[in-house]
Image 1: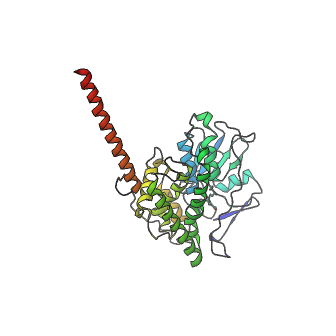
Image 2: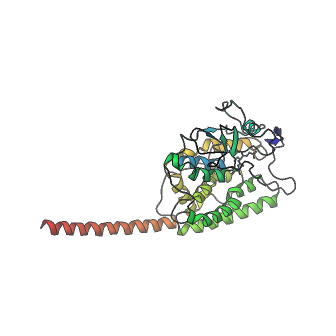
Image 3: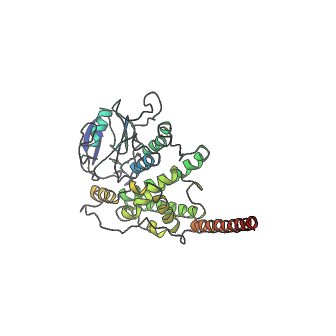
Length: 344
Ligand SMILES: N[C@@H](CCC(=O)N[C@@H](CS)C(=O)NCC(=O)O)C(=O)O
C-alpha cells in the first residue's frame, strides 16, 4: 500500500496506524463537490462511479445507486479485491482511459495530488476530474440530485429527520463504522482495547434502541440505516476475526441481527453484497495484520431467513400484525354480516 505525494505514487510500509500513538486516524477526503451546480450539472452519461465491493464506504454508494434507480445514469467500475503495493488496481484496464490503477485517476484529476487514493470515486467524464471522493456526500448527491431524470423521489434524508439522522450518523461513524478499523489497525494494546470498548458499548446502545423501533430513526429506513448496514454486514465475516472485534458476533445480538437481515432483504440490496470480494480484500490485502494472507473459508452466514420470535420489536410487529389480522377478521365478519343482511 502507499499514497500519492505531489501527483506520484509512493509505496509505504503497510502499517495503517500512526507511529506516535498506535491509533488509526482516517484522513479527510479532498474532493468535495456536489452535482447540480454550474461546474457539475445534472446530466445523464456524464458521471462514472469507481468502487470496491469490499469497502463499506463504497458499498453505501452502490446501495444508493440501486435504491435510487441510477444504474443506467451512473455506470460503475469495480476494482480488484486485492489492494497491494500500488493501491487499488483494476482487474482489467478500466473503461474510460485504460488505467490499471486508481491512483492514475487521482493524478489525472490533480497532477499535484497528495493524499490517500481511496474508493469510492465519483468521476466527471466531461471535465476529467473527481467530483467527490467522500461517500457520505455521494449518497446525499444520489439521494436527490438525479430525481428529475429518474422520477425516483424516495428520500433517505428527509428534512424533518435531518437533525436526528446527523446525530446518529456521528455516533455510528465514530464508534462503529470507523470503530472496527480502529480496532483492526491499532498497533498498541491500549489503542485496540479503547477502540474495542467504544465499539461494543455503541453496539449495545444500538441493540437497545432497536428493541423499541424498527430502524435507527423510527419507522422508516433512512441513510443512517444504510450507513450502519455496510459495517454490520461485514462484521461476522471479517471484523470479528480479522479486526479482532470479537466480544460477540452480530448474530449473537437479536435486535441487531434481525435488523441486519431486514435491511439485507430489502429489494435489490443482496445484489450489492459480495462476501467473496469482502473476505479476499481484507484478509489478503492487510499483510501487516494477516501475513500468511490466508483467507478463511468460514463463517457460514445466512441473511435470508426471517424470524418472528427473537427480536423484541418484531414481537411488536407480530403483535401489530396480529391486531391487523383481528381487525381484518372483524371486518370480514362485518362484511359477511352486511352480505347476509343484503342477501336475505
Ligand atoms: N471517507 C472516505 C473513506 C473511504 C476509504 O477509506 N476507503 C478505503 C477502502 S474501504 C480506501 O480506499 N482506502 C485506501 C487507502 O486509504 O489507501 C469515504 O467515506 O468515502
